[in-house]
Structures are given as structure tokens and as C-alpha cells.
Image 1 (cartoon, rainbow over the protein chains, first blue to last red):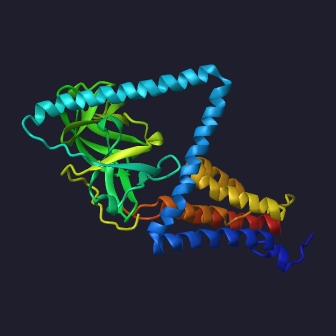
Image 2: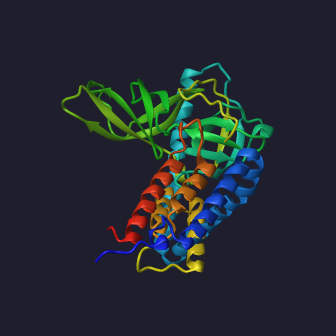
Image 3: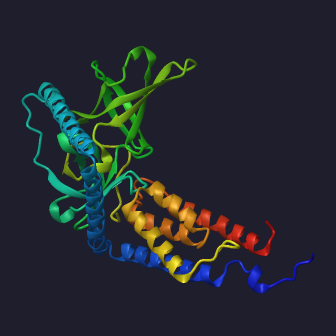
Amino acid sequence: MKRTFLAKRNGLLSPTDVSWGVFALTLALVVLGVRLLAPNFFWYVFTPVFRSAETLSGKGRALFSGFENAATLAKENERLQEENTALTLENQALIKKEASTAGLSLIKEGILAGVVARPPESPYDTLVLAAGAKAGVTLGQEAFGGGGVPLGVVSSVLPDFSRVTLFSTHDFVTSGWVGDTNLPISLQGAGAGAMSATVARAASIKVGDTVFVPGPGMLPIGKVARIDSDPSVPGVTLRIQSTLNLFSVAWVTLRDTGTTFSIVATSSQP
Amino acid sequence: MIRGVSLTFATGGLLTLFAFISVIFFPWLFTAAFALFASAFIPFIPLAVGIFADTLYYSPATNFVPLFTLYGALATGIVVLVHRRLRTGII
């Protein structure tokens, strides 16, 4: 049967689709405009929203853990394990620092900054911090989590907010060392808090070896979580996981380390 | 709107609101999945959510292009074409 042409039926979109679609697009563009024209004001508006999201997710976890005692214990165990890891890493870093920076006093106090937005809500490996130029934050400063674990570099600064690009960002290249023999490696960001590096098969790196990056001394950044080996290739690929859970980082310390990175931070628009 | 599935004005509003809220409250994979689901009813949602996500999280230091706006535009383009073909009975 031949269909008759109806303008309404053959239209690209129906009026209802268009009305909500246009509303959604307009809203997104208005928010974008505010961010481009007044970025500091924009983050002042959105910081309480992110804070309430964090509070809600915390309450949700508390609600579910209230029903199950085992869940409470598991959470407590997880927290203690994280603390233990942080203390172990701090201890390792201090031992390395003592050996490599003996006689020097390079460690500065740093700027404590709360985290406003983080992965996994953020699809990019970045953190938005509630501290900016007024607090002394400058481009290129390094961000450290609990236990002095290096997390990333400040890539843009506003008067009251700043953005940190994590070392796990795709294509972010960092120099470091791995293993007991301090084998030099080039760490490449792989996204979602992971990094990778290639070393010779003969280097005998094993799962669980600590990976260090330069700071004042050698700072532990992660551990080898997996080793991928292809018999046709002379090297092996190390899959490295950050020792801190980047999805729950609540605060960081920012300070100058004098280290240069492969991604140069030049933006003033976070 | 998919043929045979009607969308009330209020439901459309809820879908739009939840899509925007999920950008802040939920992991981005969930947001992307929900935007694709909502696009069955409101084709422009992926593009709008992509712009909103890049507004919040995009940093020129990490990526040359705002990827989620591009992905949103691509999804919207495909959904609009599919809607058109469904409505005209080609598929």
C-alpha cells in the first residue's frame, strides 16, 4: 500500500521531542556560557552541589551498612587497610628521602585543598580543588594525597579554584623508578587511575613492586598490579595501579617540587 | 518518541532533569548509559548532557577536544536519523 506523505509524520522531530530537547540544550549552553564568562562564580555555584552529592552518597553507604553488620566491618577493614597502606608508603618514602636528600631540607609545608570534583563522575582524570591563586596555588605545583602519594599536577588556576591533571591521564608521561633496584622507567597514563610502563623482560620486576617518581627524594606513586608478557616482544608491560583510591580522595596537599612534566600546564580556564 | 511509546510532558521533564543530575551524582558510565536510554524519547539529551559534562569536567590540558560533546553530538545525530526513519516507517 502506498503511504501518503504527511509533513508531521515525516518531520525530523516531533514537537514534544523538540520542546524538551531545546530546553536541555539551552540549559547546557547557558551553563557553558556562565563557566566561560565567569569561571570563578561558576565553581562557587556548583561547589555546594558537588558537596551535597558527596554527602548523599556517604549517607547512602551509611544506610546500607546499617542493615548489615558485615558491611560495617568490611568498610572499617577497608579504611584500616588504606591507612596501613598510606603509613607503609609514607615510611618507604621517608627511608628513600633520608638516603637521597641527606643534609638537605627541601620539604615545604604545602597548601591543603579540598576536592570538589573527581573521577568517576568526571570522565577525564582530573580533580577540581577548592583552592586557587588566593591560597597561593600556582601552575605546575604537584598534588599529594594521604601518605605523600603524588597524584598529579596543577594544570589551571582561578582565584578560588584550581584543577589538577592526574598522572593517570591518557598520554601523561612521567619519569620514575620501579623495584628494589630502582630501575628507571617512563610511566604513561592509562586512565581511571591506572598507568603503564615497558621494561626489559630480564629486569625481573614482579607484581607488588613499588613504583616511585621524583619529588623531594623518591615518592611512591603506585604498585605493579599486573605484568603483560608477549613472547614475541623482548619487553614486558607493567600495569600500575595508584596506591590511593582516586575515586575517594577528599583532600590533597599542593606544593612546588621543581619537577617538570610532559604535559605543560598553560590554561587559565579550568 | 518511539512509535507506540508515548511520553508525557512530565516524564520528559523528569528524564531531562535526571540526565543533568546524573552528571554530578553518578559515575560517567552510568550517565552515558542513561543519556542513551533517554535519547529514545528526547533525541537531544546526549548532546545536552555531553556539553554539560564537558562544562564541568573538561580541561584543555588533558584533551585537545571536548570528547563528550563530540560523542553526544554523534549519538544525537544517529538517534535523530533513526527517529525519522521509524516515524516514516522505513525501518
